[in-house]
Length: 293
Image (cartoon, rainbow, N blue to C red; front, side, top):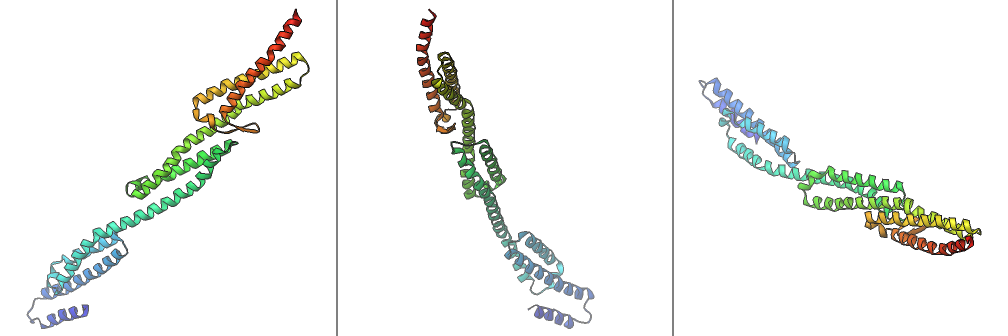
């Protein structure tokens, strides 16, 4: 087809009267050059649009538009077809941009999902470990670290939440897990604190009470019972204070020595043991009083 147009143009030049202006011949040649340039640019623009590359497509369309704005193009016989094609490509550009934005958004969302899922895979077992009665400090630190990593991964894609409702719902659910983990981590810390405080006092009280039982000397036995009672009272007082600060601690099963107990049961047990020791000490005091008379 291009050959037919070119043939027509050159035929017109041959048939021009010998007195025709050289300027007109030059303009006809320029018309052919600029129209051909515009068609090639539109070919490139359409190829770029098919590949969802709106930026280079728009540049090519604008260049084609500039080529077609040359006044000499008015001499080109198929100028209107090229202008119609140019107008059609200009109408296509906004849709190509929308499709490219949608594709880029989908790619970005998928990339952030991968990043988040990787962090979530680390987060899930770390948080589950906090429920163990014998949780240790390293596991609590690991849980806090993975919760922070998951939060960072979620925050990296915060701008995507406004653009993709499905993604927004997805991260909203995961953000809820992160928020819950703060309380779980704090509870695990308090359980360790309880085990090292009231829990240890209970263990020391039990050890002293056991020594008192096997002690033959009455005076030494009384001293051991008094020390054991002191430990149990401290266990009860400190434990009640901690339960008042964090009520959720009461029923959180915790490793206390070789046992797994709730802090509430530990406090109640310490109160009872202190009371029993106090009652057991009364006969000894009466006997000592009578012996002094």
